[in-house]
Image (cartoon, rainbow over all chains, first blue to last red; front, side, top):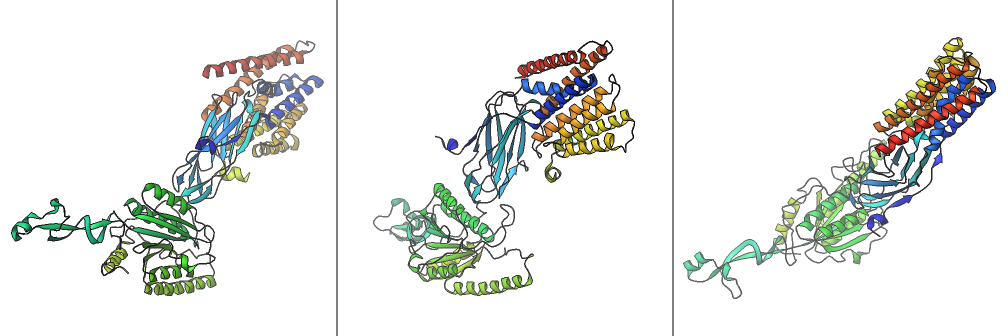
Length: 437
Length: 176
């Protein structure tokens, strides 16, 4: 069975009389009765159109066995992208028109906005496409589709029959992100970043004496002729790095209106994590992901490339906000070797998350905490004075906690624009030049 | 009704207006024929209220109530069986019935394809042509006192209707 067939839903049924047909029959019968009993041919003329409509409807009743199948146009969608539910209705011989309506669902934008379509039936089958564009990442239900058809004079109808909605994972859209700064401590075999060690690479290091094993093409002839000894041009090795993304999904502060609207802290976290992962995975670095949540904690092993990035997006889409129940200190550094660049994407309101960041920094790793709450604080217009005061106090406390984490060696940067990590990565690279901790 | 006001498409609102206007037109006809004035409950106020109810709730019993009341009121009010007012009255009842049938099955918010309007209007026109022929036959035979004239008229009307239906099917087969 194809994936499309697996994801499709089916509904059948039969043609049923409508109120309109019963009405036409009853009124025609009443009129004929009155005309015959009271010898009133004018009443016969009065109800003649309805009698004709009733006879016409009965003779021209739809003949087919109506059924409908629906499926999603795209099983894997990204928030903000167009998607659609394709409804294929068959057995509509003799029908006048068919209609389909898509039920409203949270964070799904319908096209047309009311979700209903009416199509004129010319043959026995019809195909609708109802737009359902996901507005927010996560496990989204696309809602139930109702489909039906109507015969001549609205006398016979099929449906509306429900085609159950589907739930599909919607991947987050990566925010715009770019960085030109190198990763602080590349330790891999081949990659994009300049290593601290000399080796095979593209960036010039020095001109030194020839050694056994040097390639002849690297001989620097002007210096060799001038000094009378063979000299070669050496370069720094190019290496990749392991970027360990840690997504804090313990809290979701603020209101989410989907892509293009107001964003909650978890929205910003997920989209920022997607952007950072996209950048590093596409430049050849190994990216791993850990989702910290009490509901569905998840871990993705390091990998690189587009396929790995898609897996990572699917995992980000699973993030569900829930506070972590317990932290085992021995598992905090699980799978993170020396030289790993740890990027924590968090609202930094959870004390547990701050403790984790400090512990990782103390263990010798380079830790960057991306603060998604800074500059995007939740709207508090509906909060009362006490709630606002409580929020201000919590923010002051948070600033203090962030300062303490900074003292422990964690670089905290607010999530702002494409160059968010540039300055901090350059600083960490310079610090790393003195020796990797 | 709230859904109609909030989400009703132009086509749906037009259909409701057609139902209401057809019902009010029939009410006006009753008022003219009865000569009882616009404030009379049985010939003006009651059918007007039923017309509005049929426009607002076409999917339930309101249109049936309006049509049944119309037939009974016509019998009570009209004394001249050969009057030409029978034809516009029949046309208004057909428009009311057809509009209510369409309004009941079309999604409130959806727009309606133009072909659908054309098809339904064409059918109603065909039925009215047959009705006019039947009325002319009725005019012809009502003065002759033919036994069973009403039955003959009924049979003739059904035959003409069958001819209109056959033409519609032929036209659809040609289009398909």
